[in-house]
Length: 282
Image (cartoon, rainbow, N blue to C red):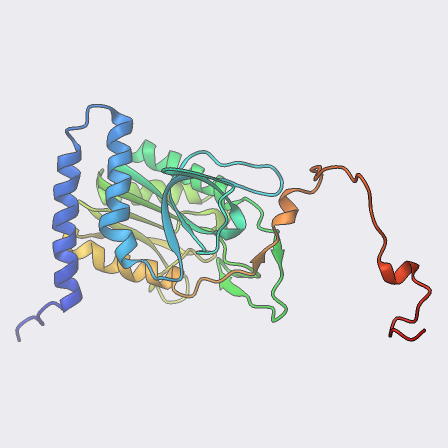
């Protein structure tokens, strides 16, 4: 029996993978390491993410995240946010945004080795630990079940994407070792290496691939060509973000002790000083 022919989406994503690889090679002419990184992050955003992320979210290149307790992240490569997000700072390709509006972050690497992976896992864990508290809470009480518990908001998703990297099995070993000391909600949700394959979590109940790590989850590594890898990545992004939601941001929680000016004079309500009947009778 012959193998089924690839779907139309698979054919489209194969051409996208070819374009991404060509762009990756072309960006190598940049001499400065920082310039190469910026170019490759922008390429991932424009060539892939903005086309295939659900329209429930927006993706922006480069920025910092702030929480009500004063914590500020380091520079994040790609931020995935609610479309209503008000930037606290937005200048060309850099922004500062409140963590409540952040659904996910993607760390982008040209080459992902074991040490780069450890560093990226620690960076993502610190950001995932930021408290999300500044909301006008939804009276319906909407919740999301993930990481083995129920949440009143969408916890921050952490993803690592690399154009090339070390052996995928070797990287999976590092992820397993790093995450042994982390609770599920602080772990990296997935790793994608365009030239090697990808790493996901497996269910402790049936061994199937899970979109995020649950308690006692296993790690599963896949070898894949660039053309094969983009299909599960599209599915992974869709499962995370197509149902993303947030209660309205309570921006005043970010300015609890700030001065708004000084009262010069105040006029009482006319109704409070008038002897006339409020209905207009003499």
